Image 1 (cartoon, one colour):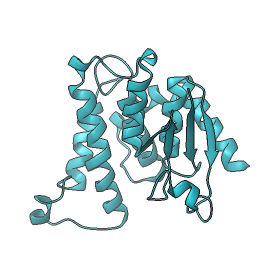
Image 2 (image 1 turned 90 degrees about the vertical axis):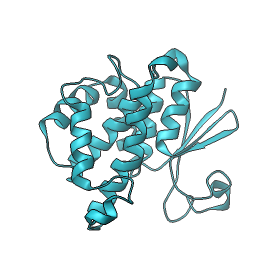
Image 3 (image 1 turned 180 degrees about the horizontal axis):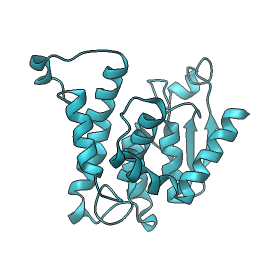
Image 4 (image 1 turned 135 degrees about the vertical axis):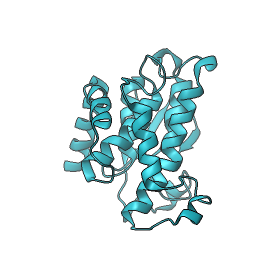
Length: 202
């Protein structure tokens, strides 16, 4: 088994790093620079977008953080990071809600793109406020986003909330902070943060 992780510590690669640490399988890390190795032909052969993260698992390439999280949960079932197929409704719903509406709404909000009521029918997230309210309700009073156990969806949703609170792209709400506090206490999250901080300092 070979598992190679391509990343930069100042990127969404932190999401994939956390997922890899939750999986617990050995992996090799390749840190790429934005201005050089990320744009090189060698890496573009893996990801034509010249973006990180990406993983290569036994010759199979997976890009996009939500896809990486879902793939790793399925590829390493012993880690218990995906619910049984019959119980995956909330798992898929909130994993891809974060990958679609949350990410796009936050990016547009940061870019100061105002969506009119008419445009809200066209864009997938409707409005920034509606997206934030839906995310708030999804985690309200819950330790985990999908059922009664931690899953890959918590890695992905939790990462978006952590980023949003750290950089002010999401409002500080009790539901977000309470949900996140349980996730960031996990040993795998702590290991991932330490590894990325070491990579950033190198």
